[in-house]
Amino acid sequence: MKKTRQLTFCAIMSALGIVVLYLGALINILDLCAVLIASVFVFVVSEELGNARGFAVYAVTSLLAALILFSVNLFIMSEYILFGLYPMLKRIFDKFKKPLMLVCKGAYMALVSVGTLFIERLFLGDLRIWYLDALLVAITFLALVLYDIAFKRVAIMYHARLRYKLRIDKFFS
Image (cartoon, rainbow, N blue to C red; front, side, top):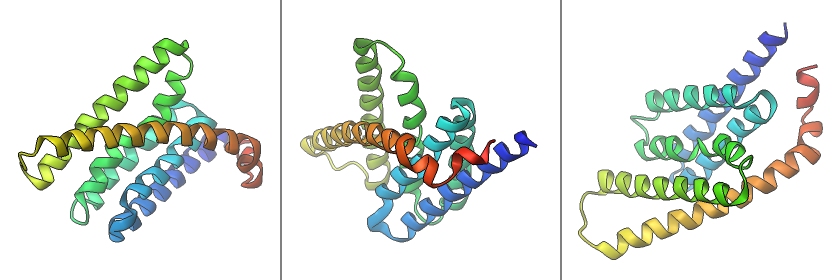
């Protein structure tokens, strides 16, 4: 019975992630916000059930986003694939000592920044303006630093208030 509840919880979180991503794809202004909100569902699963289930929810949501959002907004799907993985990686990185943690987070942020540049080149073509590329990488890196700070605060708020208000703690007992 407990395993069925856990799988149901994972399916609900994946479905909520897809709904948020689809709404973000329809309302183009909210596309990156939708990616961040959808990654919160992955965070909740990884906090409650561990990183293995969190990776499973991320994989299911990414696969469904690829199938559903391919014709609506390809950009939001590709950004979720890049940014949606971070909540689980943050949990792993935070277990390391501070210097190694900062190196791992920096490497991930640099990799995602270059991935964002690649996606921008894929969608917009080669603009041959080097300072726009540098600006995009710098803004992406800064956004990921803010993303890290926000997830630290979301984790504190989740454990202090939201977990009990949403009755998620009672869902698995």
